[in-house]
Length: 292
Image (cartoon, rainbow, N blue to C red; front, side):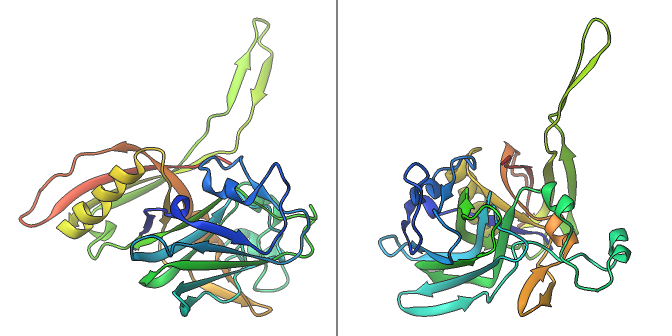
């Protein structure tokens, strides 16, 4: 069942951190929606980032992510969600990278079952760590703890944070359809002498999700409201399902198939909301991965 993360509230939050940041790449860069405008620490020491929404109205929180990061394969991330001083959810230690699924053809090249995915495979994906709570909760603070003391860059870098709610329609794409695709903006230029010059870019993932049995709450209260708030520039999270985790040295890592089908995106078009059935709404959502 596809899960959507919507209504990113990071821009309304107050940010604090235990880390020290490069003056030209401050913590507040996490509140820009351009992934290239990163926040970068001066060392790779473990740090916490606190996203405080205390001054905002009561909010539902159910979808969390950091995108455009430089975390290594041995890094860990922990997401803790609070309502006031009360902790309402703790993700535990998570890997920002997936383990190699046993059904993957590359799995046989490894001599142990829970192999973290190869570096070259990681390079083909926009680095994003995504965590969904079991359900939306009322919360006003999230603390993200990052440990990556063996980072080869000797610093920690993040492009964007997502703190929003989740939507998992009761009668989702099982009663419609979903398409996942790749979009490649690479260019091949041919000279008059037929010499080829290439401008390669990393392919972007796309998703088209056709819902045919949405309730009024799901269609109007959630999706339409989020579209008006985000427009075509705001972020969404797209996940093919809830992940299966493999525990590796006390750290949970999602499987590589889920990781490949889960990303931060923006909508590319708003399709009409139609009513094919009595008391049911239908709409198609079109997404394109945000380029790093």
